[in-house]
Amino acid sequence: MTDDKDVLRDVWFGRIPTCFTLYQDEITEREAEPYYLLLPRVSYLTLVTDKVKKHFQKVMRQEDISEIWFEYEGTPLKWHYPIGLLFDLLASSSALPWNITVHFKSFPEKDLLHCPSKDVIEAHFMSCVKEADALKHKSQVINEMQKKDHKQLWMGLQNDRFDQFWAINRKLMEYPAEENGFRYIPFRIYQTTTERPFIQKLFRPVSTDGQLHTLGDLLKEVCPSAVAPEVPMPEVCSWLPTWLLASSAEGSHLPSLWRDWEEDGPRLSQQGAENRRNQSPGTETLFWDQVVASDTENVLCLNSRDHPQIHRMVGRSGVGL
Amino acid sequence: MEENEFFGEKTFQHYCAEFIKHSQKIGDGWEWRASKDCSDGYMCKTHFQVKNGTAVSHQGTSAHVQTFLPVEEALDPPLDDLEVTETTTAAEVIKYEYHVLYSCSYQVPVLYFRASFLDGRPLALKDIWEGVHECYKMRLLQGPWDTITQQEHPILGQPFFVLHPCKTSEFMTPVLKNSQKINRNVNYITSWLSMVGPAVGLNLPLSYATAASQDEGNVGGQGKKRSLCSTFPVAKILEPLLHLAMSPLLAPAFIKSAFISDRLDTDLFV
Image 1 (tube, rainbow over the protein chains, first blue to last red):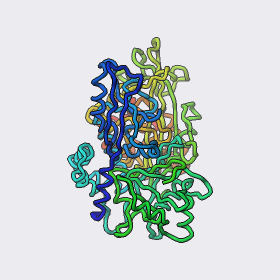
Image 2: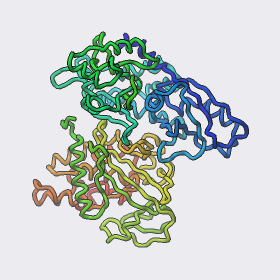
Image 3: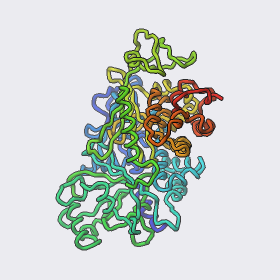
Image 4: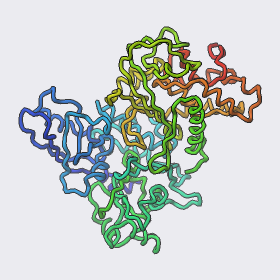
C-alpha cells in the first residue's frame, strides 16, 4: 500500500472550488458579497464552513440567524455526506465553481439532519468508520484502538493532516497475511433517481472458488441495472475514492464497456486508457477488470484507496465520463 | 447474501413476520413495509402519546410517572400490564413512528423512530432525550452521541432518531445462547424490542411472550411453565444491559417488558 501513497495524497487533497451566495430572502443590513472557498472533497460542509458563516453573519442581525444550511439548485445539501460525494451526485456536470446557496432560516426538518456542533460531525464520522470496520474486521481493529487513536483519526480529518490521519487509518486498511482481503468490502452506491439514498450490501472480496472479485462483479451483483447492456442506466460515476468508470470509444456508455469486457476479457478500451492518464484531482479511474482487493503491485486495489470510510460510488444518469 | 451468519436478513424477516402475526391478533398496530424496489423492508408502527400535564396512573409502577404514556390503551380494552385509570385534558399529542430495520453491517435489528406534533412540527433531539426512561438517562448523559442520534433512514432517506446498534449483539447473545440451551424458541425480535423499546417509550404487551411460548412445538407442557428468569442467572442478562448504565433499581414496568417470561414472579427480584 505504500506504493499508492501518491494516489492516497491526491485523493486526500482533492478540492472543489465553490462560491457561496446568501439566499436572496435572508434579511441583511447591507449587501452580502459571495464568498469563495476551496472545499476538501473528503470533509463535511459544516466542518469547513466556519468562515462562510462568519462572513455572512457580519451583515445580518443576530435575531435573523438560526441554524445554517446549504442548498444547490433547490436541493438541500446533506452535510453528513462527504463534500466530494455531494458534488459528484449533484453538480459534477456543471461548470465550476460550484454555486452553493447559504440559508439561515427555515431549516428543512424533513430533509436534513441537524448539526448543532462539531461533536455531531465527529460522532457521525466515527460511526461510519466503525461500521466500515465491522464489515472489514468484525470491528476488531477499531475496538482494539485506544480512544486517543480514534481522536487522532478525527483530528487528522478536521485539521487536514494527511500523515496524522493515515498513521491510524493504515491499521484499518490491513488484513492478515493468510486472508485474501477484508471480510466484506465496505461500499455504498449512491443514486439520485431513487428514494433509497444508497445501496449497501454484504460483498466478499474473494469468491467461493478463490477468485478475486472485480468491480464489475460487485456492480453486477448489487446494482445490476447499472450493467445491463440494453438498459440506459443510472451509470456509476464517482466519488471518494472517486472511482470513475472508464468510458468506451463510443462515448462512454457503461453498457458498451461491459460488452468489451465480456467479449475480449479484461482489457482497457482506448478511451479508458486515455482517461486513466487524464484524471481530475481527487479522482481515480477504476476499471471493470480491476480486482476488488489485491495486494499485487500492478493491480489497483479498491481498498487501498480508501478514504476514512466506506467506499462510495455515485450513480447518475446519462452523462459521459 | 449468505445466511451462515447467526442472525441474517432472512432470519430477521422471519421473526418480524411472526411478531406481526401476533401483533395483528392483539391489534398492536405493527405492520411490514416493503421498500419500493421490494428488495427489503422494515417493520413499523405508529402511535400517539400525550406529553406532560397528564395525571395518568399506571399499574405496576411506583410513584414515578412516566413522561410519555400511551393514549390508545385508554380506548382499547385494558391490557394486563398497563391500565390507564384516568386522563386529564390532553396537553400535546405526539405522533411516534417506530421502524425496525435490519443492519447488514452489524447483523442485528436497529430501531429507528421519529416524533412530531400533530401539526407536523418534529420533536427535537433534546425533547426525545427528556422523554427517555430514567434507567437509560445516566448512559445518555455520559455519551449522548453514542446512544440516540439523528440519522438518515437507509430506506426512506429522511431524518430519524436511532438507537445505536453496535452494542446489540453484546446483550442479545446471552439471551439467545440460553434459549438454545433450554431448547426454547425465542423470537429474537420480541426479546430485543422488549429490551430497547422502553428506552424510547415503546412498550410491548406481555402477550407477545406468552404467544412465543405457546408456539413452541418442541417444548413439552412443563417447558411452557418455565420462566426465562428462573432458567438462568439474572446476572447474566443484566451484565450486558448494565452497559446501558441502568440504575440498580429497575422500574418494575421495565422489567416486565424487558424479560420475556410467562409468569413474572419474584425470581427476578432476588
